[in-house]
Image 1 (tube, one colour):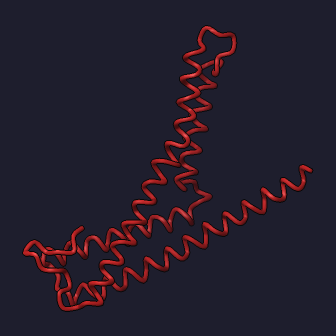
Image 2 (cartoon, helix red, strand yellow; image 1 turned 180 degrees about the horizontal axis):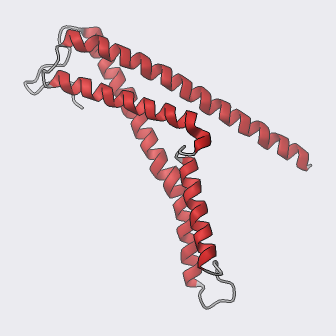
Image 3 (spheres, rainbow, N blue to C red; image 1 turned 135 degrees about the vertical axis):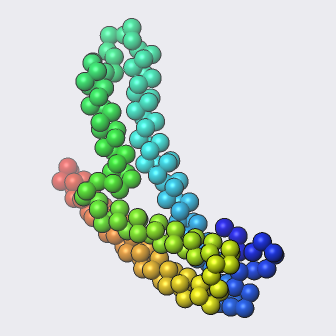
Length: 172
């Protein structure tokens, strides 16, 4: 998304604060989308799928041995079901993770609305004085969602740390 119009002029040529907010919001939104996309593909999907594929490859390479990885197709189906369950959980798509999933979805919707406003401004379907308050409001909403998201993730992480610490103490 460029901040220049096709004729070479900047978006928000007369509203410097709005141009600064546009550049900042664009950077923050792009970092959020890039980070989320990277997490989903690299951690949530690949992090769960690669060990499953390794287990399959090991099973195929040891067909002649006495202990194959999967005793029958039902065990393979059970492992595949567990894999899909882990991926859904990592992508925050489980019903128990509805709050976190909704925050992510709403944050992505705000980024999409921002992109639409910038696109309308660039195509001159909207004047800069009309777009400026919309972008300010979207940025405020985005900041609120990000604050809620970070606090929810931190509270979940701290809860997990307390549980692990408790279990560790009980073990010894």
